[in-house]
Length: 446
Image (tube, rainbow, N blue to C red; front, top):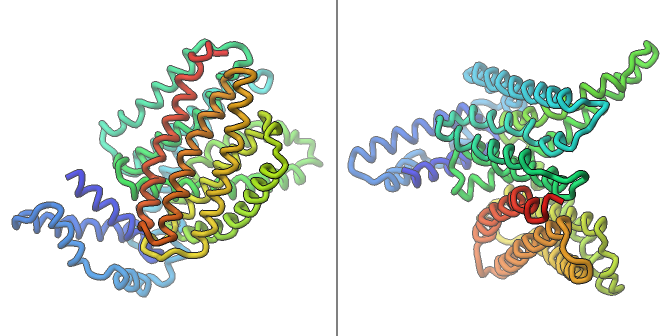
């Protein structure tokens, strides 16, 4: 049954990728598919055999998609908020649920700020727990939307509770480096935890993991757009209210934190609601930025290799390069999530290989400089976290470069490269968790 549910989840993801098909349509098609499977299994077929036969009986999905497009020709740009006449109630309910969770996150962040004594005080525990004030509401939003059972809710909540206990019971020193690392890495760990309710508990599905990668990229786009719109709104508000003597800065101190917290859920709702209308952003953005990053990476690698400036990799520069490597990896993953797996190698695949190879060379340079620095000055929490991240990135980049090269030579299929990336995602989660849980006591909470 677990295998069958995984197959149905992959089929549903494929069906939902068509712009002309909304969530209600997918629900109807899935219900019809399940009835077909049930009839076939009752007739003596296994679940896997029933799935294959039922999908075959559903017919050519491209034809189904075109039929939906003809029937709902004016719906594409309306489905951001409306799901059509037959789905208006469902869309309204989803909007209300998103608003409730967004409002709860906005209230939670304000309660935490009041408890912390803002704006007079800024205790370290506030920054340390910032992700726990907001991200549980996003996880609950997905759990509610996916109709998870009680067991799944408990499994989802357990990491949040355990991490909250761990990071708040640890006796950090004043101005502790380990505490700063926890504040930086905890949201990353929690984002991986959110993947569980987003995928409906089917965390073993590589397709579902890639869908979560796609969601992360689209969520980031929407969040940035909301932030830019909010900044314009606050700027115009300040200009309008300035003659009245209203202290706009005081208002902003309360509005901006709530807006930033609530937008986390609102952006997720937009990604869920738009039914992949903006999914075309993935190939467009990767086509635009991947070549630019590839050129910049090649130039940087050549300059540092020719000049031999390995001693220039101080802590600030290492942080910049690590951020650059993470961005390059994110671009590669986001581009893969929107690529047609059956398509033959294209010029963009060569560009991505150049970017990955250049990032790999820079990663080796950074690692060499950091190991030399550790040999001279010893281990510190920051150096350990940076070395660990670069080692994790190194293994990923080596595997990606190797498989990309074999794919471009026709030795392997694209799905093997995709599987490598989706299978490697838990390694990033484990390293971030190690930084949060293991690194502080390892260095005496210094």
